[in-house]
Image (cartoon, rainbow over all chains, first blue to last red; front, side):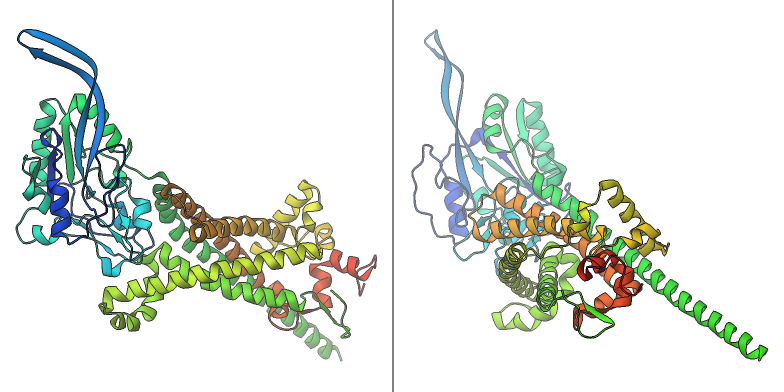
Length: 295
Length: 247
């Protein structure tokens, strides 16, 4: 676990994603590709509209289309029709959530993952050794291995943010899905949405990711109960990695203490041996002096 | 093992055992040094810094952060090369030892469990706190004592964990979930091997065992007088005598 100075989860930047507004146009996906100079991935066909099917080394933002079913009532000229299992498609613009205490940054053995003072979690590709520990540590399956063996993911457009601009995906959105703001304000807005019956993901998540992420998602409760379940893990924690971290935090000092104890026992054993030798030498000398005194 | 011409010394470590031990020592040290860097860079970056610092500018990286990147990459490459190589050598040596029926380290485990525990407690008290060994235990010490057997079990488990998971990480196309579990197993195996190593170093550098340490790194011979005290049962077995030699 690399020790890092993460900005407080209450400070820095955040984006509130109002998923209800999303029309699935993928403008954000394209803007991300363009701004970051990523080559477009080849179109692949899958049973869903999602394309590419997951985040990739060249696709740091992907609109994921979730198919859900819910009850729908259609009204027309006084007549109403109730459809029990109406299929609805929920597009969720997905990218790195920029965890408050990013486990990928903690796991990187060379410290190639930096956290900006604003809270953007960025892989410095020139420092990446391609070990994949970041991908192992991420509960959201975000860092992806590129063809050069290094890992890539969303940078929160830190280059734009630090120059007073919003991330490319935020700026391009025609449906006002994203609100780029301070974390403090995002929390306030998200709580307002919650009060209006929306479900919010990201404000109160597992301590493994720092209890909060910087991309907070809000969606009407009836849709979120299915779509969020499909999109986000039940617990934002990677059990094996969490256990590794706990073991390491105990083992490294533990090994130091055991080594010191073994060293102390070793020194004591050598001291006992020396005292034994000195004692037997003195006894011998006494015997000799007694013998010579009697002669 | 055969009694050498020199009357007051006996060979307890064959040439093969000594070569194997030296190789193990070198490979294990290299793997630990390169592995702990990847395990805990915040504590052990200093190990790789001298390697990475001169190389980083050659690769167009800054000397401060680049040194760690390059150093860690070198450490990782060495780790992934040495690990399989040593693993293959260990497997080959293990097969030879089993085929030639030369494994004696588990002989003390044939003793009844109560006796084993009594021996283990007495030996721990003796080596750690200088308490004398009970006569019956001292007279029945084999080539390896029961603590060595227990530690070897720990080492074998550690090697299976570290070797199996390491090979899986390098050679298998694992899913992220499998990769995480393999890394966890790799870590636990490493911690176990460190526990073994600490106990092993303590035992071999204990003043009572210095002849054994010298034997390992010289000609494999220990004074008969020392062997009579530390492995009398073994001596009785190999010399075919009922009495301890010299008595």
